[in-house]
Amino acid sequence: MSTSALTRRTHPRPDLLGSQGPHQTFSGTQTFLRRKATQDVSGADVVVSGLPFDLATTFRPGARFGPQAIRAASVQLAELLPHAYPFNFNPFDELAVADWGDVEFVSGYPDQAVAVIEAHARALLAQDVTMLTFGGDHFVTYPLLKAHAEKFGRLSLVHFDAHVDTWPDDGKRLDHGSMFLRALNEGLIDPGTSVQIGIRSFSEDDYGFNVLSAPWIQEQGIRAAILEIRRVVGRRKAYLTFDIDCLDPAFAPGTGTPVAGGLSSAEALTILRALGQLELVGMDVVEVAPAYDHADITAIAAATIAHDLLCLLAQRKQFEARQNRT
Image (cartoon, rainbow, N blue to C red):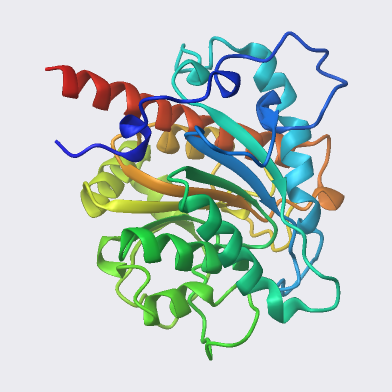
């Protein structure tokens, strides 16, 4: 069977493996899950980085503060290692993970954002790492997709969101609600093998995407949603993007465009944790806006989603290693 870059890497850096604790949960350096802060990513399997950009929002701004909020909320999860719930293993026994920090944007020049993000992603992908990226508003996924499609070819999109993000796009505007139509038009993603999960907004056209609306999931059940995602995506190379407003505002009030009637954090995590067989080549968690949060519940949900994505990668690496030994 073909193997991912995670399995092909035979010499992960020792200083990027293992748990970094114990630490006080209420102090210390703010990196995601206490990973080493470094921009030297040689020998890394996964690189975490932040894109504090929110100039494409159409309602409430503030997602530029999302990366730091997610990192801060991850400390309790870090202290629970080596037994990551519910996986019951330490993902950092398998994965060498570095926290690159946040990309800098020049204030007053939003039109430079696409080039800046794309260059950042290209530089990391050239070192054969998997990216886990924190937004920022959801527009940041577009340049990430450009860089990933350049390396991996046309991708399947696994898209958790309240919104379809395929509203009319002229190929120029900075809008966090239209960039997936642009990505489709540019051939970055294949709608027929892509799935949108948790949707509860109107669109005149589904453009060939497979849409699992929030009401559909609530009526058909979580198991049906899992099976449909697996069927649609199959073994194709996939990019997973999680807009935190996929969750109902009761579970994620700290976001720019909240929509009632969404998934609970438990429902979303149950679906996510069953997607370990997908070949995820890149991932992001976006739209956390901590100014609207209460008791950090949105940031905690986002940090848990990102933690579980790392666990899925570790699971896949374990599985591929076993397959290669047989």
